[in-house]
Length: 277
Length: 272
Image 1 (spheres, rainbow over the protein chains, first blue to last red):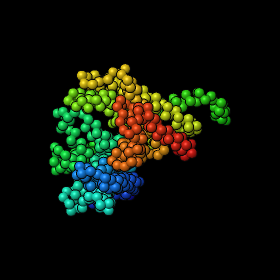
Image 2 (cartoon, chains in turn yellow, cyan; image 1 turned 30 degrees about the vertical axis):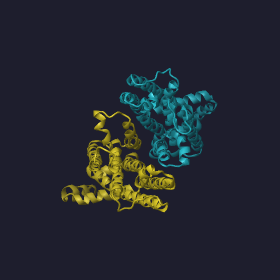
Image 3 (spheres, rainbow over the protein chains, first blue to last red; image 1 turned 90 degrees about the vertical axis):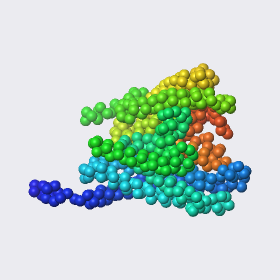
Image 4 (cartoon, rainbow over the protein chains, first blue to last red; image 1 turned 120 degrees about the vertical axis):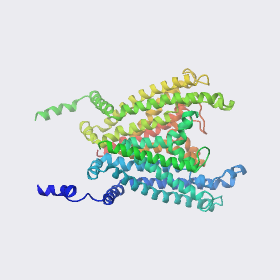
């Protein structure tokens, strides 16, 4: 009896509660174990890397081979960076799904109940998850984006087609923006996963929100409502940030993506604290 | 002893009553999946409200369009484009009809009760196809009539016009085939995330890949991705091969058939 009572007593009355940094460290350690042992954590980025880099190189190779046969107008329009990064949306989708799986897998297996019993500070759990998933997504995105860039531009230069290098105007900004976009997608997926809790719903909403909705919304005539909503869909913000067409400035698009992440984080934290697991 | 006696005559149960029993149990499972009705209602909302929004939007832009733009205008496809979003929901429903059963472990009970696994899968697909086809065809017609009434006075179509009835039926058939594709992929991979990723990859990502990579091969094969089925609800067909509605549906049906053959082969051999 005294043995079972001792531990909680020691924590609640005998000593002060562990300092916040130690609790945060423990939460981060626990989330890290779960994150790196997630099977999709290996498969999804691998698929993302193969799709992103492979497709980019394929597109570059085809365009490089066709360069010699282009007329003057087509040559003026030739955009080596754009061709290299035509498949950003596929990376965005995979990162969004990856973020969602970090959470929904835990709900699917029921592990979330253990997690929340061990760390009743649910906001801390969510913060630890978001920090680690964000860092991992960022690191993966850096590797994928820069590999795609160097291989793609290497193929262009090998074929004597126009190519750009890191020092050229706007190039580094474009790459950093792509990395930021992919990281934001992973976090949007993670927080959406907290909200819907099931893998099926989370993955479907990721594809709907990031891929299909912008295409459909494009076909609706701009009126008072759509003019002020459609440009703020996450993939339209990302597109605007990378290829400044009209309307929003790249800075506003960056802020818009950050707002998506922060607002979803707030809603997810609120929902996680209020709901049973 | 008496339990054994009771099971012996079951060998003699006739095929039709066995099929009826399987159909009944599959129907119970289908309608008691919580997401089922929700998904169908969401699909109906997307398709029908989408038709209203798209019709409203295109009425103005049609009247302002150039003669060439007016000639190329497809009033049926224009209002039925909500299907592009709805297919994600119907496809996901097909996936979780199967993967949900694997996740909960119910599939083991199902196979113990009905060891004829091919029969289980066939009836499951049949029940799913009938329900989804009925719902999706109804919403395709509702979207068509609503959309056309919103489109007028711009160019709009009557249900009796050439090709229109096929196209409106095609909307429901397309969604049903997408759902079945999701279902058979679900049998193949058994896990919800992997199956959804595979299905959405085939439907939504593969066409982008073919469009973005220039070259002869991608150009020739690009029209034969699963979303060729979208030709079903179009009146105007473009592209090098200009697949018609039935050819387009045939391409999608071929993908479904391949997935189905693999699913039937694998479900007989694998443990549950």
